[in-house]
Length: 114
Ligand code: AMP
Image 1 (cartoon, rainbow, N blue to C red):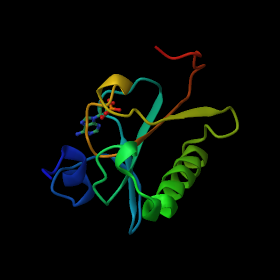
Image 2 (image 1 turned 90 degrees about the horizontal axis):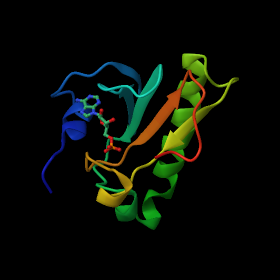
Image 3 (image 1 turned 135 degrees about the vertical axis):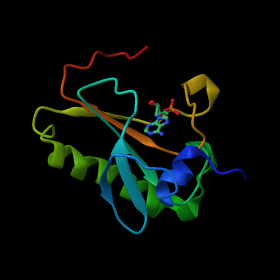
Image 4 (image 1 turned 90 degrees about the vertical axis):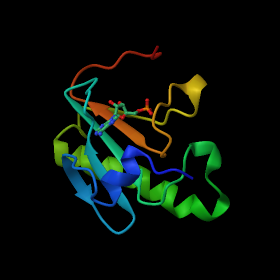
């Protein structure tokens, strides 16, 4: 499997504006933010898409969401509310094939999204 730009961010080969990291998970600011707060939370493990996650990844998937919630607190958007999104494959709008959770907030978010 070829490494993506997010794999390179996770292993430190490519710089990013990191807001959180631990042994399993890295969170950094999106280069092309769609809201005042737009952060990507990724596993260090290179799972290409949500549909490639397996039963053994269940704890890791939970960690991604808990990290998004923690970072939302850190960014001061938890009380007002925020959105988490996982785009899956081309039809879902995914462009980087390393699983990531978008954390968006800091402005009113419309529903449904486009
Ligand atoms: P998706 O379309 O769900 O795959 O989201 C990919 C996101 O990654 C987009 O919002 C891009 O703006 C963002 N992105 C791509 N390259 C980088 C990078 N080097 N650092 C931070 N964000 C990036």
